[in-house]
Image 1 (cartoon, rainbow, N blue to C red):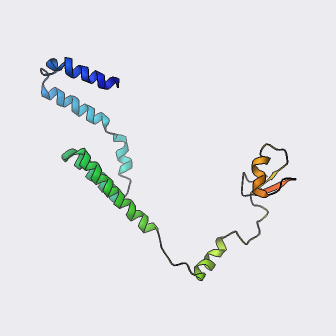
Image 2 (cartoon, helix red, strand yellow):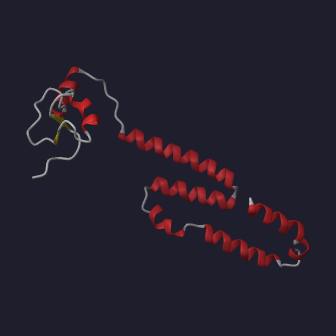
Image 3 (cartoon, rainbow, N blue to C red):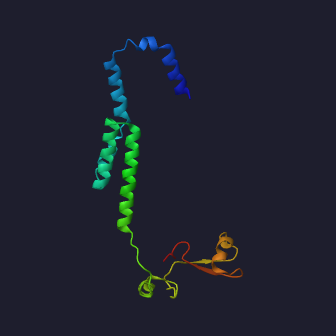
Length: 156
């Protein structure tokens, strides 16, 4: 708010003084402000991205300079959305779920298997500060409770 009021005061009261400043000096100030606004340290990181991302960035930059900021942002957002959709579609597979598909994945499921002794377990004793929050996971309220898959692995 204070910046807006300062700008308003400069425009209202100092306008006669600004008309005497050469346009070349104002252009130089404008170029310095634009240069300082650029995040030049990010350009090497941008150039490490995929070719499609670099093209979207260069096109958005070019449209910002040549045309209009609004148009550049719109085109950049649309192209970035298409690029994102393409990346997701290339990493996503759709297949029919059959009995063979389920049986092939059963080796990776822990549902019908015994839990090995070296699994991460934590013995919670009644009265410990975490007992109340942990007892609901094991279902016991009267004695020690082994909670599997929660907390840290045991120390050796």
